[in-house]
Length: 269
Image (cartoon, rainbow, N blue to C red; front, top):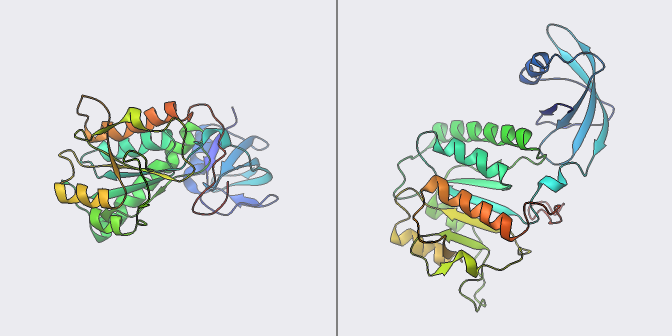
């Protein structure tokens, strides 16, 4: 298998580039040599074929020889998911982000709620975001994705709700929405969701270990979120969202269907 490397920079066919230190060190561990082939991706989708052209103790240079815009499309879901997760303590958030990326989400929003144990501000929030973004890119490299999900800046829950567009007031079915709030007390169950994926982007909201408080849950409902339960068992915060992602993939053919959905942020594929 040709080794894959993530380079978050502009890549152009025909260009020679010097690999960053981390990628160069990884190449040395793999014992690649001049003339060997490798695959590069910059997180925007598609893959760049490259060949090692020069290497010494200080630097490794590769030439980009081709671009495949279709590479990795089958690894993307046929629907767009934003995963809004109350920040979990300890190493749970790192694990959550890694697994959510493996399950196909496109954007992860770390949230600070009234009952959240972890509260981040300013420099600490920026450091954690950079750390989580590195986890996202590493998970992409491991699982075969070429589009790296964005880790949004950590936000206070109610402030994040204010950034969302108002809900469609004409919806007649209370269990029809593309915004889902996971709650063990919900009246709608997973089985009430449609059998086919929606054309609009989907948002999954998961509260902290002790749940959203009443005011937060009501604010989410006013913003168009539908409360959904996943059955009779109460799941931990690090389990609930991932269970929902996996269940939706099974229901909406996310395990095997090549991606055909559009990127709502850029208008691209």
